[in-house]
Image (cartoon, rainbow, N blue to C red):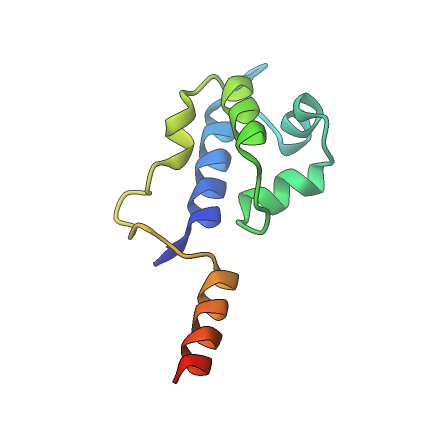
Length: 99
């Protein structure tokens, strides 16, 4: 199963690359400039290492010209989202403490 941040990141990357500017796919740098963030933030977001706010995701959807829900689509052949890793670990600890 995939962490929700991973498939959102994959969707952002897929839609960014589908956004053609001057005959080429939109770069992470161009998206970062439009968002007014560092390119490293976009890179980490696309790798599923960032937890973007709803406001950031909405701005990304507007910049990329895709409907907001498209960023939340589960990839073809992929399983649905799982709990974030920190939540899984927290649950394991609380389950052990309750035992």
